[in-house]
Length: 366
Ligand code: FAD
Ligand code: UDP
Image (cartoon, rainbow, N blue to C red; front, side, top):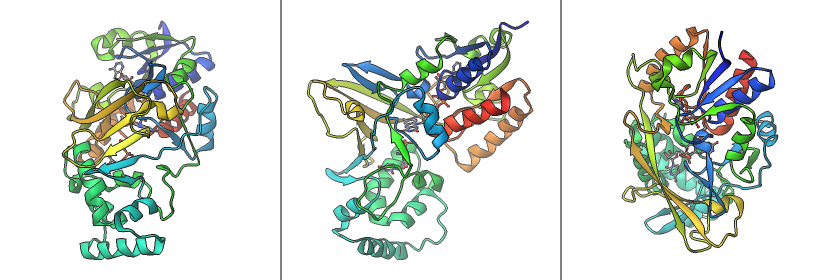
């Protein structure tokens, strides 16, 4: 009856894992993507012999051994450790918030001195139970650091006041009282040698892929092709926004090839003041310790999301989460459609979350 067992909408990490595992189990899959390339947001493209992270810096990190082993079967990872620096009004600070940051800001040298400083600032602010991003940040690292490294960055990144944002967003960043600039606390971390697209290519080997194909442009035709659908696009769009539109934050990326070997000395430099319109500049070669004669940099500009724009970040505040739950209820009743990934699950997922969700989904459905 059907030409395929599964139609997989989206060739990002979730869709590619599902397709790979389905093929392994003898299922016939068709993967479609509305973009002109595979890989979704982890797509990397070679420019000047450098693997450019087309949609912003992507560093793989996880504490889950199963997830780490899973991705390592497709490609070797290097030992890259993300240690961004932040620039605020021409002053440079180490991230995440650690003894190097506290020393630069206050001149303190010991953890005891740093903790005392934060405690003093916390007392002044009178915050007991932080219930938004601003309060959470101040209670973690004090007002000085909040004003220099968080407020401006956060408000331009999200296009809203830090007092209107959920506290969990800032808890993504470690705060530690050691001289350790590692941005993540995870056990495993690295960059795939040769770029992320290599992983997705391997996963999709031998599977039919149609690019430049938007599910919603030929919905009926696509639905008639396969017995089941794995959908990794926007869940509200799938239901024609019937309960309302979920909010996202978009971005624009400005790539530039520079005729110099080393532009900023680090893969990621954050610009934390509000007045600078981009949040970070990525210098891609440093993810893989490149020594090419030229370099490629990318400025990342946060942008308002309107229907039709790329929905890079779900905005997981209470209002949107409630709306998502209404769509989720419909999704749970579907017998032939599986929803997965950052957009269909409307969650601020990192890659390791997507891998473990995809593997869970495979176990439940294949
Ligand atoms: P996506 O990669 O978004 O894939 C979905 C695919 O579906 C896309 O290719 C899209 O074109 C396609 N699609 C959507 N709708 C349709 C349709 N109607 N028809 C056909 N195709 C459709 N994670 C980390 O672990 N570390 C990081 O350092 C990191 N940095 C990030 C930086 C930025 C700027 C962003 C935006 C994300 C970052 N992430 C990072 C998160 C990571 O990108 C995601 O977790 C992961 O890519 C999500 O995979 P996915 O398959 O769910 O979604
Ligand atoms: N953040 C900040 N200053 C920084 C870096 C991050 O205020 O220099 C805040 C900001 O609100 C951001 C959040 O921390 O959205 C999470 O940062 P992360 O680097 O995890 O963001 P992502 O890489 O997902 O964009």
